[in-house]
Length: 359
Ligand SMILES: Cc1cc2nc3c(=O)[nH]c(=O)nc-3n(C[C@H](O)[C@H](O)[C@H](O)COP(=O)(O)O)c2cc1C
Picture 1 (tube, rainbow, N blue to C red):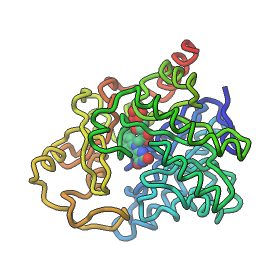
Picture 2 (picture 1 turned 30 degrees about the horizontal axis):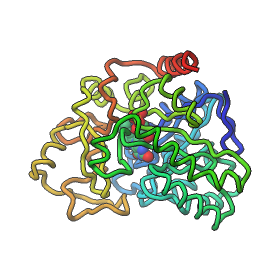
Picture 3 (picture 1 turned 120 degrees about the vertical axis):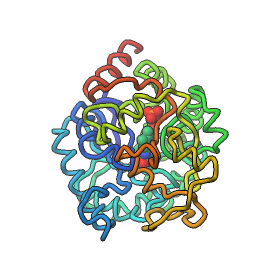
């Protein structure tokens, strides 16, 4: 069942969510796309392994992003689509979007703030036919974004990712809502978002597919949500413990070892709550004994540098290196279900099998 996303066709309704820093790069995104889904490269500090990252991180990030998009597209061999996840909160947001579009990315998915400027930035690369999509966590945000895009650029999103409170990484909910999140919240939000999109679907006489994300456990649950109007689902945590995932084996092992109760809500220096494993860093922050960050490079616009107990980029990079003491290990609420190494092919086949069985 193919889905139309602007001018692009996605053969399977399965998205792999962007995961920063360094968890979803070209290898994972390319492998998911090669199976007919949409693989997503996270642009967040994606050049952190470049030799000149310390001297000129902005240049290193854009060079790495260009290479990663091209490589993921090669790996995809035209089967599925390659997207980038660009967070509005990043200082290099507009440059990252333009770089990815010039490199031929199929879609730009944008959250961690309202991506009101996304179509304006995309219009600066007129040759690109990439689909543009916001990540939202409420009908209100969906309506606000559609209104702004309609007014400024006479267009609407090509698709929308609806992220519920059980997702990993930064969350568009209060810490209490994130903590109390249950699977049925996603169903309620799906109705709310589809209602908010309805006037824009009518005005533009086209569908605006909504992909649900955050704690979608399997293809059966994806099928149930599709019966309620979702175009498909986005999965992230379950792609981490795969051979193809760009995380280190130490990161994958930390997730495999973790039980559901090890995932907690943390306060991120960007002012949003996030979900991560309760690592020693998180415990020190909770206890108020973590010394402040050192060596800020200004990578996130809303970061409360001086008042924050840690640097989120350094903590995510430490996690990538498998530094359990100092790392921030982002994960979704259903991390307890990840209990062994797998491959992208096996994960995709499993989701497709369960989805078809539940149709
Ligand atoms: C390790 C990790 C890192 C993430 N990083 C980002 C990110 O940089 N930007 C973003 O928009 N979402 C991020 N997310 C959210 C995912 O893209 C996705 O929407 C969500 O986790 C899906 O839920 P699931 O993990 O339960 O499948 C991250 C999630 C994880 C697990």
